[in-house]
Amino acid sequence: ELYATAAPGWLALGCFDHYVMAAADDHELLAAWYALGFGQQQAHGLRPIGEADGAPLAEHGRITVRTAGLADRKRFAAMAPLTAEYQVQAPVWAPLPAEIGATRPAMYSSVLDDEDAMLWLAEADGQVIAFQVYYPAEPQAYDLFVPNRCAELSAAATEPAWRGQGASRALSQYAFNNLYQQGYQWCLTDWRTANPLSSRAWPHLGDQRG
Image (cartoon, rainbow, N blue to C red; front, side, top):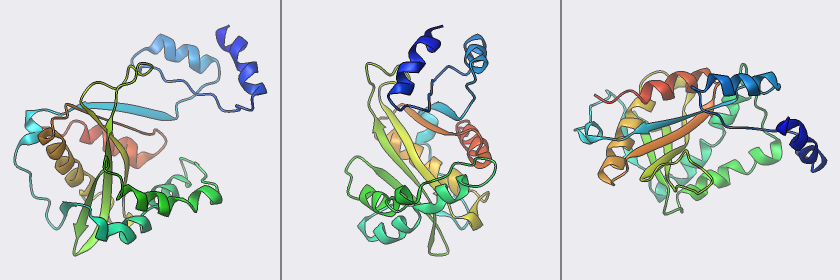
């Protein structure tokens, strides 16, 4: 009844897409939203960062990880389409308007100028094959999901030829180790549930502590 009352006003304002966040283990609440025609699009995960993340890093064969620098600007900007190109396909079907896609290389390039950004690159055979970008996540009065001392994995991608070969695992282990050294206690991220790569990788990497 609340949604039936509120939604017409949002529609009049031109808000045609309506979203809600609900706890994944609150099945009664989820059933209520599903009955109203809502479906699942995103999953949000929160992972503790603990002492095990400060242990010496394991080797990952040909894959090495390093912090990005200003010299990586052109290469990193060239990786901007990776996620969008994958998610526009089945089964995600998440189209990216051309005018927005055109701005992504410049947006990625600007990450290297952001003092808050923590950008790490995975390399193999002298080529950058994957990246992960983290930011401090500040708790907000209206958002009960973000704890203190939390970092957010805001963007990540792997070159198609290297997917499934351990690049994300190497990057996340390196990132969690660095976050632990900086005093972070939590890491959060979100992903499209229809994306099979993300839906396999992120829950699995969230349990990778020894």
